[in-house]
Image (cartoon, rainbow, N blue to C red; front, side, top):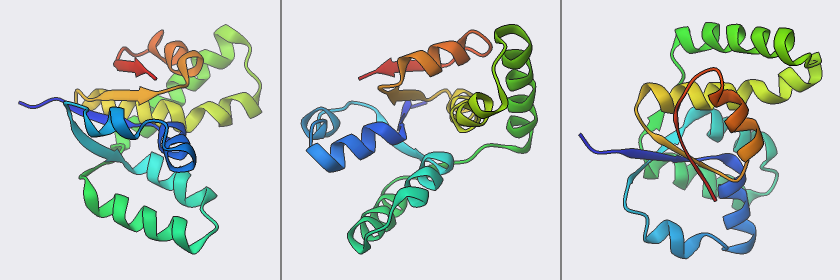
Length: 135
């Protein structure tokens, strides 16, 4: 079985804006998969026709991993624990919700998440372990 990797939203945005990760992405040794949550975040922020076209290409370039119904429920359990144990307010929990869904999705496929967002994802790993690589 091949190992998959999923690029988190900030990695893709940073690369589109600065081309900073282009070489590293081209030489990356794992099979790339998209996450539907990441695609949704990208579409939410895309305002220009060129961005829309880039997203259409990205959608077609790699298979898409999507949260299963149990991931939605499990994400609620994790967020409740974060509220109870860390005292997070509703706004912070909303900010983390998509990150929890991304983490649970990659975890269920044995994929590795590539992200610059060390703090949020290491926090989530306290509740559910998954493969994480910070760029």
